[in-house]
Length: 343
Image (cartoon, rainbow, N blue to C red; front, side):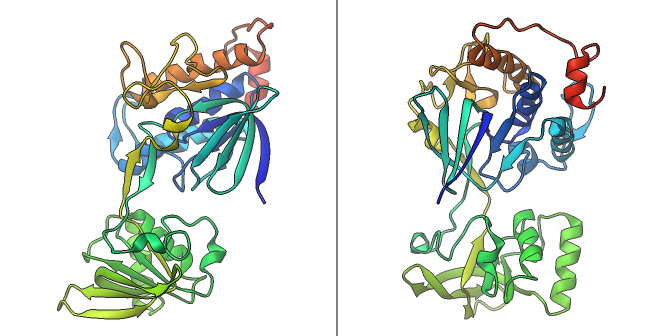
């Protein structure tokens, strides 16, 4: 059964520009549901440089990708946004009443008055590890994201990788799974120091197994894993390890994904927009951020913030074509301050 929700705007992409779009739409009284393929907000900004300083955000001389993400979420909180992570938009259709039905690969259905595409350079898709026949197990016993932890309860779980995602899910699934084994080709990890320390404590306590090596091939039938073969780095020996669920975290790649099939005009995998309101070729669908193209476009976060503000005004005109939008300032408007919860 599909889950169906209704909202004013559905925002595709939870990067900085998508997060600021929540705020700009909220100021005009519109609710938002946000869909992102990643497991958390922040997009490329939080994924590629969560701890790397950014120096060109207005009024913030120095801010990390994660800090900027946290501040944008805090700013959007008064408007009670609803996030749907680990999901990709698969289809979009226009309903007879002019609204849009957006469907994800997790069977979520969102009915919205407008769609805002803030997908950056496209969808962040997991990189498939170079293991023969892994496709036969995907979606049944090999997963690239955790959508429901209960699917891993009481199973032998193998997690492959050494970054934040690999360690985060090792820590989270240890109390749920019957056994968790982490496999990484190096003894060093590219993860938060706190996560590394917690992992080492679990390994020392015998609660998590760690193997230095790499997965050679998979054993099972009908898409269900029973074991994997691992080549150990120390001596090159290949061992068989019981495994019922595998989570490979080999990083992400950026692709335009299903957006290319939505009937919108594209220019070299970018969406041309009307810069007066950032509408696309389809009325009711707007686009902002790195996904758009127009003369003079500059791929900066601050440019995306500007685009989000104009987009929100365009959304108002689309939803209320006969109503004049009276521009207000948050410093002096009691109605805007009431929406922000500061009056």
